[in-house]
Each structure stands twice: as structure tokens, then as C-alpha cells.
Length: 76
Image (cartoon, rainbow, N blue to C red; front, side, top):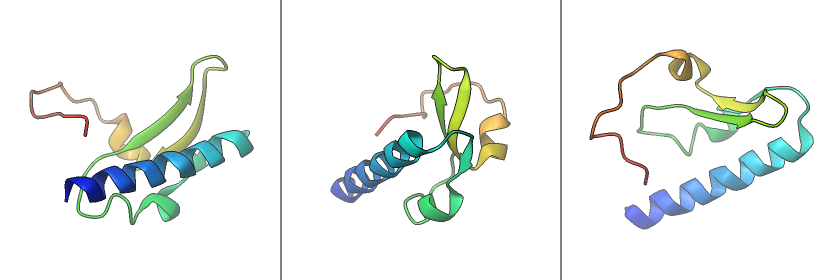
């Protein structure tokens, strides 16, 4: 289970990197990333701080929701 999460996360990072290197505007990656986030609730936003631009997004509505950090928020 944990190994599958790591593999899915690695695949997602590769996809995000490809999108980042080829995108000039924010790209909705929901169709590509949906299988990777299956069974989870969350969002992903790739942001370039040097150009102050969003590069890629998954579930942008969830990213816009403000939430207080809890101890249950973990980075896998």
C-alpha cells in the first residue's frame, strides 16, 4: 500500500514536471491526475514563485478552500 502511494506520487510528479516544462498558462490536470488521486480527497497546485504564476492544478476549488492545519495533515 505504502509503496503504491510512493509510485503514484512519483508518476504524478513526472506528469507535473512535463506540464510545467511545456505550459505557459495554468493547466487543469484533473483528467490526467484523477487515477492517481482515486480514493483520496485533496488538491494539488504547482506554483512558480519566480514568475508568480500557477502552472498546473488539480481540484482547484479544494485548493481555494481555507483550512487550518491539523496534526492529521501528513506528507506521504
